[in-house]
Image 1 (cartoon, rainbow, N blue to C red):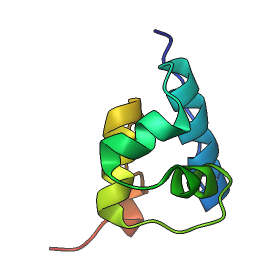
Image 2: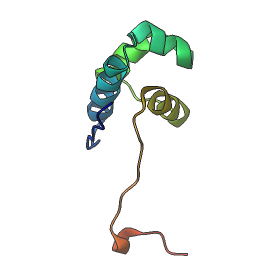
Image 3: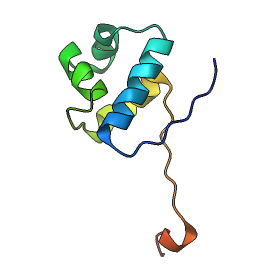
Image 4: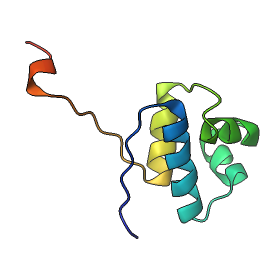
Length: 81
């Protein structure tokens, strides 16, 4: 399976990445929804960037579709400890 990279700057960007990854894995919206215990209409709204989503659901969606979540920042922006 080819590795794809998307810059996620808005909910719609994440939704599009989830949609493309879902389709690449041959999953329907209904099948994906059942896996994370939400309705098909919720998956549709997420893919369209029309809804916000809890972090737990975000991680579940990423894991089930193979979308990798990463954090990137410049050294100047790194937390100070």
